Amino acid sequence: MSEHSSYNPTNPVEKWLDERLPIIRFSKEHLMDFPSPKNLNYWWTFGAILAFMLVVQIVTGVVLAMHYTPNADLAFDSVELIRRDVNYGRIIQGTHAVGASMFFFAVYIHIFRGLYYGSYKAPREILWLLGVVIFVLMMATAFMGYVLPWGQMSFWAATVITNIFGSIPVIGDPILTLLRGGFSVDNATLNRFFSLHYLLPFILAAVVALHIWALHVPGNNNPIGVEVKSSHDTVPFHPYLTMKDLFAIVVFMIPFAWFVFFAPDILGHPDNYIPANPTVTPPHIVPEWYFLPFYAILRAIDFN
Image 1 (tube, rainbow, N blue to C red):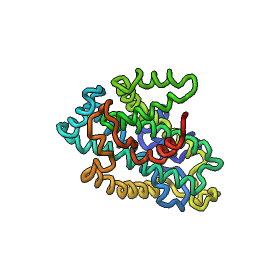
Image 2 (cartoon, rainbow, N blue to C red):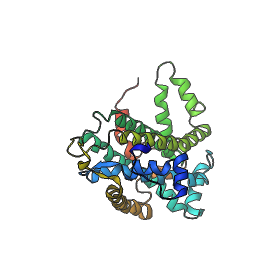
Image 3 (cartoon, rainbow, N blue to C red):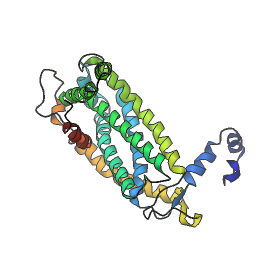
Image 4 (cartoon, rainbow, N blue to C red):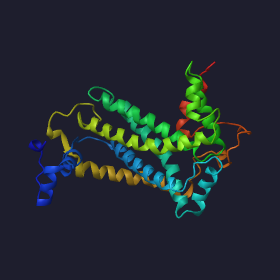
């Protein structure tokens, strides 16, 4: 690795560290000096936006978990307590809730950009497949997070979605019972979902690291779809693309901040501000907006 690197430690501490754990060399090679096509447009900035949003979601989620109570009798009240009594709780909870929507908004653009410019083709198949795994993990994490406030829509969404597993022949019922922790959605289900909702973002971060690794082997695709032929066609990732990504993140933060500060609940469903009641079914059971296409597909399938 050191034979092909332009990095030269400048002081004894760097030299000592480089001989034992070359993390600075690794960062310079793979983050700063990574050769990127000169003609990348702003559609390529959504990868950095998504990395930023993942950090935001993990940080706000860890803080919220400090105050949340995964108990069917206390979960709804604990969310309201966070919003009303925890210092900056309304902003933290709003950032996490709105952040989920903005996360999916950015990932859909990222996916459609990849489809439009053919980023799924050789030699980037593994990169694309890891992206699919990331998307599935995102959906699982978001669904379990949607259940945690334990409002009407949370409870009944959990009931509807977990019932899907019961339709699997032979093994469906045991899987359903294991997932719910009983014969219906209840306190055990909430505890399971909270535990998995806390775990999955860290698994997601690990797969994102693999996704970035898979990107750095063939390099970035570009708008014209012609593979880079020489170093004359590329620029170092830093400062050229880091500045572009930073500008895109700042622009992305403007609508994000508007939703957080002025309309944190506008993307939610009114029924989810009513405590869960197993005896009253809402008139319409609908997921968050980013699941609507998949929910429409689900409703079109007759499992009988």
